[in-house]
Amino acid sequence: MSERTGRATSGATGREFGGEPLLRVRDLERHYPITEGVLKNEVGRIRAVDGISFDVYPGETLGIVGESGCGKSTAATSLLRLEEPTGGEIVFDGENVRGYDKQELRKFRRRAQMIFQDPTSSFDPRMSVGAAAGEPLLLHGIDDRAARRRVVENLLERVGLEASDYDRYPHELSGGQKQRVALARAMVVNPELIVADEPTSALDVSIQSEILSLIDDIQEEFGLSIVFISHNLGVIREICDRVAVMYLGEIVELGSAEDVFDDPQHPYTEALLQSIPRPDPRRRGRRAQLTGDVPDPANPPSGCRFHTRCPKVIQPDGLEMDQQQYRRVMDMRESLAKGNLSIEELTKLAVAEYDTPSEEQVSPADLERAARDEVDLPASFNDPAVDDTVERAISQIVEGDQAGAVDTLAETFESRCERTVPETVAVDGDHTAACHLVDG
Image 1 (cartoon, rainbow, N blue to C red):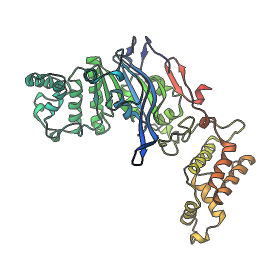
Image 2 (image 1 turned 90 degrees about the horizontal axis):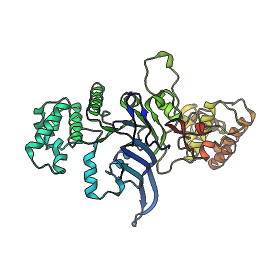
Image 3 (image 1 turned 180 degrees about the vertical axis):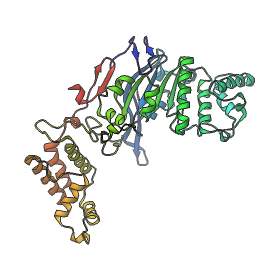
Image 4 (image 1 turned 30 degrees about the vertical axis):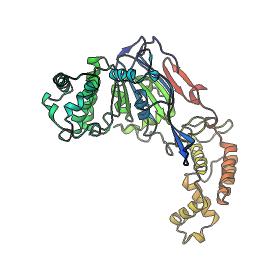
């Protein structure tokens, strides 16, 4: 990632930023040990956040976006040390947050607050919402109950509620009202930074826009910096100045909202953007096809972690296949590597799909057909060398030699994307991406 000290940036919101960042994050990690046995010996690690870097400037909103399981919520809690990072650097207003003792951490959390995804679970049902919103004041030494009430009532009105709502209980409020109280609670200690983790995803669509507008208004009024976590790119585009796209614990693209949305450089970003519903009939059929599931963060793929699903995975030199067909061959390799496409699975598929009376009557030809159908391979690739390799691999599958089939396919189809980790490079100015299609 490029160093951005003193650089100005502008996003889709039109706001301008410059000077020193309020928050500077470098190579942040949050790993969870996997243990086994009575002695709890560590046998692996879940790499939920695996070396992310970014800056947040005063008054700026940085969006972190990605699918469920990409690590964005863990990044949020790690930033504020609600979960202890296992590596990296967090610098807030020039100070090393990871080096804070308990007293310093308490002061930091007065300046940096968090809004959680589910407003209902954020409140004690036995406590009035006003008392809950004022609790941070008590924790930070404001013992005067009347003073706390005055501050909270003022903030309740600022977020669109009534001062009289102070004495109501969580079950008496709607989801949108509870999220307004959560925003008031985050604002009650006058923070400089708010980390908002999916603050609208649990709300009805009709309420989401109201909360987003409220967050935007509050930011403008108080000059807040915001880290906004979401899986919804429509929301991110509406309120964020810059966007970081996360996949499997890593940031794969970072730039102004305008750059990322109008000129995406990483295939994962493109796929996310093309998944946004658009009421434009001319765009039908243009959605990127993301195949497969998000890999296990305890065992991330080699090279580019997105290569197991990437619709633009780079073909080896000398191979000129239809890109969609190449992706399907890669899917077959991935399926075999996971232990799928066994004879047992293919036999059951043949009985279910090909009107074969029983498993005993399934022929080798049926198994070969089932193997092709399972990953949607064509009968021919119109390339004798490719056809020969795929046919040899399928014969090995039918013979029960899945490992041999993996090796056969790798000889011809192994991609640069699975061998080498892509570097994060500057595309244009502060717009960066980590992809072999970009780094050349």
